[in-house]
Image (tube, rainbow, N blue to C red; front, side, top):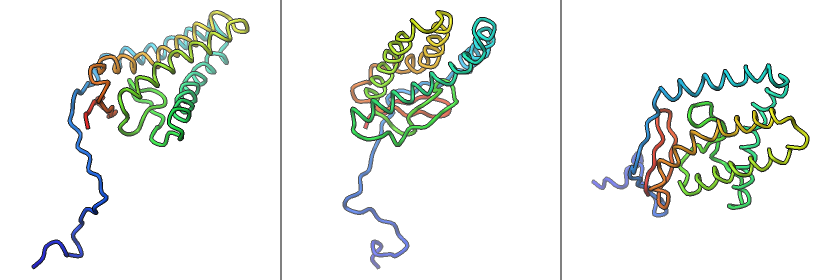
Length: 178
Protein backbone atom coordinates (compact mmCIF):
# COMPACT_ATOMS: atom_id res chain seq x y z
CA UNK A 1 0.00 0.00 0.00
CA UNK A 2 1.39 3.38 -1.03
CA UNK A 3 1.31 5.81 1.92
CA UNK A 4 1.97 8.88 -0.24
CA UNK A 5 -1.33 8.72 -2.11
CA UNK A 6 -3.72 8.78 0.82
CA UNK A 7 -6.38 11.44 0.27
CA UNK A 8 -6.43 12.51 3.95
CA UNK A 9 -2.67 12.93 4.18
CA UNK A 10 -1.21 16.39 3.70
CA UNK A 11 1.89 16.72 1.60
CA UNK A 12 4.19 19.57 0.67
CA UNK A 13 4.32 20.80 -2.85
CA UNK A 14 7.58 21.21 -4.73
CA UNK A 15 7.30 25.00 -4.38
CA UNK A 16 6.91 24.98 -0.58
CA UNK A 17 9.47 26.82 1.47
CA UNK A 18 10.35 25.60 4.94
CA UNK A 19 12.02 28.04 7.28
CA UNK A 20 14.22 26.88 10.13
CA UNK A 21 15.06 29.48 12.72
CA UNK A 22 17.78 29.05 15.34
CA UNK A 23 17.49 31.03 18.56
CA UNK A 24 20.44 33.38 18.99
CA UNK A 25 19.34 35.32 22.07
CA UNK A 26 16.21 35.77 24.13
CA UNK A 27 15.65 38.71 26.46
CA UNK A 28 12.95 38.12 29.07
CA UNK A 29 11.05 41.15 30.33
CA UNK A 30 11.66 41.83 33.98
CA UNK A 31 8.53 42.89 35.89
CA UNK A 32 10.59 45.43 37.84
CA UNK A 33 11.14 47.55 34.74
CA UNK A 34 7.45 47.51 33.87
CA UNK A 35 6.65 48.54 37.44
CA UNK A 36 9.05 51.47 37.04
CA UNK A 37 7.88 52.33 33.53
CA UNK A 38 4.11 52.61 34.09
CA UNK A 39 4.20 54.94 37.13
CA UNK A 40 6.27 57.38 35.08
CA UNK A 41 3.57 57.11 32.43
CA UNK A 42 1.04 58.24 35.02
CA UNK A 43 3.08 60.79 36.98
CA UNK A 44 4.49 62.86 34.12
CA UNK A 45 1.14 63.58 32.41
CA UNK A 46 -0.46 64.37 35.79
CA UNK A 47 2.36 66.75 36.63
CA UNK A 48 2.19 68.24 33.14
CA UNK A 49 -1.53 68.98 33.59
CA UNK A 50 -0.52 71.66 36.08
CA UNK A 51 2.39 73.04 34.06
CA UNK A 52 0.91 72.83 30.57
CA UNK A 53 -2.63 73.10 29.27
CA UNK A 54 -4.52 69.77 29.73
CA UNK A 55 -5.48 69.60 26.04
CA UNK A 56 -1.81 69.92 25.10
CA UNK A 57 -0.90 67.07 27.44
CA UNK A 58 -3.53 64.79 25.91
CA UNK A 59 -2.53 65.79 22.40
CA UNK A 60 1.10 64.91 23.16
CA UNK A 61 0.11 61.45 24.34
CA UNK A 62 -1.74 60.90 21.04
CA UNK A 63 0.42 62.84 18.56
CA UNK A 64 3.82 61.28 19.33
CA UNK A 65 2.79 57.60 18.87
CA UNK A 66 0.85 58.49 15.72
CA UNK A 67 3.91 60.35 14.44
CA UNK A 68 6.05 57.28 15.17
CA UNK A 69 3.65 55.06 13.21
CA UNK A 70 3.50 57.52 10.32
CA UNK A 71 7.28 57.73 10.06
CA UNK A 72 7.71 53.95 10.22
CA UNK A 73 5.08 53.48 7.50
CA UNK A 74 6.68 56.19 5.39
CA UNK A 75 10.15 54.68 5.76
CA UNK A 76 8.89 51.22 4.87
CA UNK A 77 7.02 52.51 1.83
CA UNK A 78 9.96 54.50 0.52
CA UNK A 79 12.65 51.92 1.24
CA UNK A 80 10.75 48.75 0.37
CA UNK A 81 8.13 50.13 -2.01
CA UNK A 82 5.19 48.59 -0.17
CA UNK A 83 3.02 49.34 2.80
CA UNK A 84 3.77 47.48 6.03
CA UNK A 85 1.30 44.64 6.42
CA UNK A 86 2.67 42.89 9.45
CA UNK A 87 2.68 45.80 11.89
CA UNK A 88 0.14 46.41 14.67
CA UNK A 89 -0.54 48.64 17.63
CA UNK A 90 0.66 47.28 20.96
CA UNK A 91 0.13 48.42 24.53
CA UNK A 92 2.58 45.94 26.07
CA UNK A 93 5.80 47.03 27.72
CA UNK A 94 8.47 47.49 26.33
CA UNK A 95 7.01 47.62 22.82
CA UNK A 96 4.42 50.39 23.16
CA UNK A 97 3.01 51.82 19.96
CA UNK A 98 3.42 50.60 16.41
CA UNK A 99 5.39 47.33 16.33
CA UNK A 100 6.09 44.45 13.95
CA UNK A 101 3.67 41.55 14.28
CA UNK A 102 5.93 38.88 12.78
CA UNK A 103 9.62 38.34 12.17
CA UNK A 104 11.58 41.39 11.06
CA UNK A 105 15.25 41.67 10.22
CA UNK A 106 17.10 43.06 13.20
CA UNK A 107 19.09 45.44 11.01
CA UNK A 108 15.84 46.81 9.55
CA UNK A 109 14.29 47.23 13.01
CA UNK A 110 17.39 49.09 14.22
CA UNK A 111 17.42 51.32 11.16
CA UNK A 112 13.69 52.11 11.44
CA UNK A 113 13.89 52.97 15.13
CA UNK A 114 17.02 55.11 14.81
CA UNK A 115 15.50 57.00 11.89
CA UNK A 116 12.30 57.45 13.88
CA UNK A 117 14.29 58.72 16.87
CA UNK A 118 16.08 61.42 14.87
CA UNK A 119 13.25 62.40 12.53
CA UNK A 120 10.83 63.01 15.41
CA UNK A 121 13.51 65.02 17.23
CA UNK A 122 13.84 67.20 14.13
CA UNK A 123 10.07 67.55 13.65
CA UNK A 124 9.55 68.56 17.28
CA UNK A 125 12.50 70.97 17.01
CA UNK A 126 10.91 72.62 13.96
CA UNK A 127 8.00 73.73 16.15
CA UNK A 128 10.27 75.52 18.63
CA UNK A 129 9.27 79.06 17.52
CA UNK A 130 5.54 78.38 17.93
CA UNK A 131 5.33 76.22 21.06
CA UNK A 132 6.20 76.82 24.65
CA UNK A 133 9.51 75.31 25.77
CA UNK A 134 7.70 73.31 28.46
CA UNK A 135 5.42 71.67 25.88
CA UNK A 136 8.42 70.87 23.65
CA UNK A 137 10.22 69.24 26.57
CA UNK A 138 7.05 67.27 27.32
CA UNK A 139 6.82 66.05 23.69
CA UNK A 140 10.50 65.10 23.72
CA UNK A 141 9.99 63.22 26.98
CA UNK A 142 7.05 61.24 25.55
CA UNK A 143 9.08 60.50 22.42
CA UNK A 144 12.09 59.24 24.37
CA UNK A 145 9.89 57.42 26.90
CA UNK A 146 8.28 55.40 24.10
CA UNK A 147 11.48 54.60 22.19
CA UNK A 148 14.00 54.09 24.98
CA UNK A 149 12.94 50.53 25.97
CA UNK A 150 12.94 49.48 22.31
CA UNK A 151 16.33 51.01 21.65
CA UNK A 152 17.73 49.37 24.77
CA UNK A 153 16.55 45.94 23.58
CA UNK A 154 17.93 46.56 20.10
CA UNK A 155 21.23 47.62 21.68
CA UNK A 156 21.37 44.38 23.68
CA UNK A 157 20.85 42.42 20.45
CA UNK A 158 23.39 44.45 18.42
CA UNK A 159 25.83 41.53 18.16
CA UNK A 160 23.33 39.67 15.94
CA UNK A 161 22.41 42.67 13.81
CA UNK A 162 23.83 41.34 10.54
CA UNK A 163 21.93 38.04 10.45
CA UNK A 164 19.32 38.25 13.19
CA UNK A 165 15.54 38.30 12.94
CA UNK A 166 13.52 39.92 15.68
CA UNK A 167 10.39 38.29 17.08
CA UNK A 168 8.30 40.03 19.74
CA UNK A 169 6.47 37.81 22.20
CA UNK A 170 4.34 38.53 25.26
CA UNK A 171 7.11 37.82 27.78
CA UNK A 172 10.29 38.26 25.79
CA UNK A 173 12.04 39.57 22.72
CA UNK A 174 13.83 36.89 20.72
CA UNK A 175 16.49 37.06 18.07
CA UNK A 176 16.70 34.21 15.57
CA UNK A 177 19.00 33.30 12.70
CA UNK A 178 17.57 31.78 9.57
